[in-house]
Image (cartoon, rainbow, N blue to C red; front, side):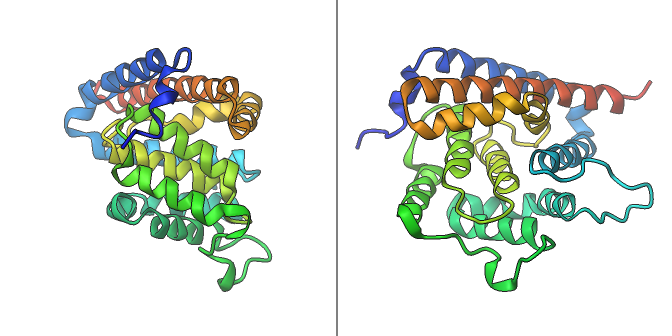
Length: 246
């Protein structure tokens, strides 16, 4: 069967951008501080990712000095970050189950949310079918370069908005899971969320362009995501440099 995402690799700039992302991430993983000390740098990257993701969804990015997080968006983003490794197996085999768990973690403290709302995607307008299609891609239905699949997962979840709340946090976490699962960023050392945050206007406009499905809109989204991952790789290098013994 034909790969449904293969045509995307022929859009202008996509193949070159995918190569640039992989090269940038290879540098992070090869940094001396990450050869043995990667659990610490990965943990720091995860926290930074949660803070940036929270801010993009209208929450706080500041960690209180006393450690008591009261902002519900940030609290949810941090829970997601903490549980992400434990969701990797589910993401590889049952992505819809993993998405439900991500939403439960991200949205639990949000105002007006009931237990019945958590982890339950809406199924109108063909959302269920498109989620099934996305799950098929994540579980082996495509062989496109990992940066392309990561961008598709991210953009599709932003477009579908399957959950009424915390959609951005869930989409960015799913993209992060995809990067780990595909081996693009297997140790979670980059912080692409910082790249999205620093270019927030373009992030939102590029996501809207992706939702149109036009070749131009798709190319714009892939270009933005590639740049965000390269910014995230530089953020990861900064974390590694700071962790390196003097």
